[in-house]
Image 1 (tube, rainbow, N blue to C red):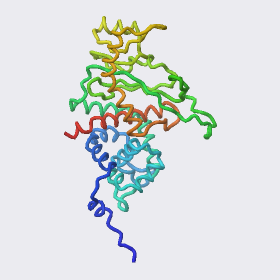
Image 2 (cartoon, rainbow, N blue to C red):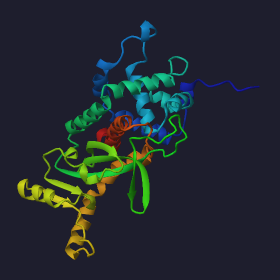
Image 3 (cartoon, rainbow, N blue to C red):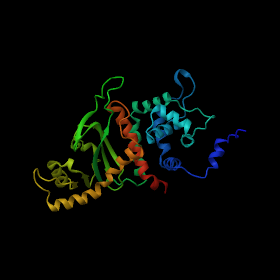
Length: 319
């Protein structure tokens, strides 16, 4: 005789183990400033369906699904599939299977396009940072500057039969990479990313500098790729800012022992700037560009770094 199926909500309530996914989603649900973000998007969200049809999905549901996409590196079709498969994801999206509509992949795609069209991912990034500043988490004293390469698919087996023309190749060490760069400015105390810029991969890190500073720094921290004598003089003499850029040995020579010691001190401070990249690539699984072109990937990165900032501070926000 077949077993009587349990009521989904009751079955979940009787569960003895909280999974890692459930714990993560519970922490992030507490960390996200839902009210502020919904108020930001609401003026741009449609009030009625296309051509007067059925009403659109609730805005909060769509925002929650969009964040799930970013946390788990899901395509639009996979986001829809995951909502059917995962009770934890449905609960986070506040969807009850059988009672509520589950957004299909086209609805999920249209919501993402709406955010891109109105520049709302950049606004989400700014709103999250404003929220963290209000909580006293971002001190904005010193800034750590760094960049990471995000690989793009190099295959030409696609509709255009060509690689993305807005991406480019660059050499790092002995290896070649094809893709784009994400340049960040992060708070030296908290590690929170306060500035983001994107370029094609061949752009040298040092070419993106002013865009990553907030202007009130008491110190700047960076690796050897940002060595610049004129910039150093301007910061240390004119603005009295501590220059925490790692020292570079002269061409064909060796680094002075004192400079080696200074580099060790700088490395300890700027180690925090690697944390946002680790969250992006290891926690959220964003190791390759998802879309063609810099604009769409730039919009995507603003959301990822906003969510990364919340992930970095989730336990502080909970207390």
